[in-house]
Amino acid sequence: MKLQLKSHYLLSLLLSALLALSSPLYAQDRDLGQASPESVGLSEAGIRELAEGMRNAVDEGNLAGIVSTLIRKGKVVHMDAYGYQDLENQVPVNEDTLFRIFSMTKPVTGVALMMLHEEGKFSLDDPVSRYIPELQGLQVAKEDGPNGIPVTEPATHEMTIRELMSHTGGLTYGMFSRSQVDSMVVAANLLDDTSTLKDMIDKLAKIPLRQQPGTLWHYSVSVDVQGYLVEVLSGQTFEQFLHTRLFEPLGMNDTGFSVPDSKRDRFAKMYQSTPDGLVAPGDNLGGEYRHPASFFGGGGGLVSTIGDYMKFTQMLANGGELNGVRILSPESVLTMRSNQLPAGMAEIPGYPGNQFGVDFAIVTDPARNDGMSEGSYWWWGIGGTWFWIDPVEDLVFIGMIQNRNLMYARQLQGISKRLVYSAITESNK
Image 1 (cartoon, rainbow, N blue to C red):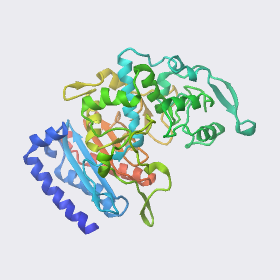
Image 2 (cartoon, helix red, strand yellow):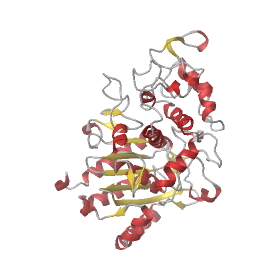
Image 3 (cartoon, one colour):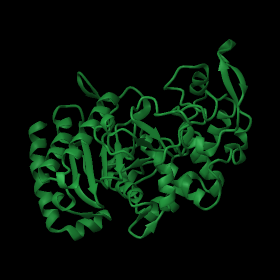
Image 4 (cartoon, rainbow, N blue to C red):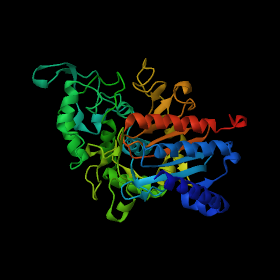
């Protein structure tokens, strides 16, 4: 396989050279222009090293395939597809490959809700229960109780939408901590893909909050609740809202909650890298995403391509607009990438040198984040996909893989960051 992939690398370099000679067509295909690295302050050698660094992950047997892109100053300077979306059947990965993006759904949901905020449908400091009355009067776990049911106390205040959008509302996923509330969340199967968002809310209404609202950051089902809030405020299903108000205007034609039969030949397989090679994961996160879907998970339900996600991230990098289509105001984008953590909370657990905004992590310390500029905003998905937007250096990077080895995915993210920032020439630093 390695020899075949190296040949594929040479072919890709040839195609890249041809594309550079026909950039108007290339730009039209992407809705983004293409540029040489030097024209936007990057070294050509550095971009080659970036491509090689990403490809090494495949050659070393840790990934089946990878697609990555780097955009600087609104121009595509690196787009590379290498390896396979289906290793067993030797189906090459390409720019049209569909990936489960899991938690990279979260910023999409945040943008959708901020669109409704701009329309005056709510204030960020409104209580969530004003619009979702099922969540009114939730109790808060105080200590462990008998029979797996915690002793509770009243909430100091109703969870606000700002807290909901920053994982500080008191909710939990049930899988990243151990408490009686976490056990109740797992038992309730809140994110049952055969149910609906309303079913999730009805279950959630019977479970106490894990901690007092506004006291700490805890990764949670908050963004799935945001998806339901979009439904309540818009009068549409979350899926309908995203397609009509976000995906269609931006030309994100391959992004959705399921993969129809007509696109299944582009759907990447999920793998797990192990000491014995790549294997299928032993859980349901390699799910088939059969059409039609019923559960429109705002926290992790979308499938997308790198080309579609480029349009979404560049829209944000542009301050809410892409190709004449305005999705959000610059002020709303600034709110999303501004710290929303409770007073006295310096950073989010597990991510040194990062605070949290509206459905994004925000870099506060470049030295602990592989050189990402202060103010860069980013996130990743449990299937390995990742992205970041750096407003200081005016760049966007996206990596798409399907691998459940989370430690390796984090290592690869770090490699990509170091290579990207190494490619910036001194005169542009």
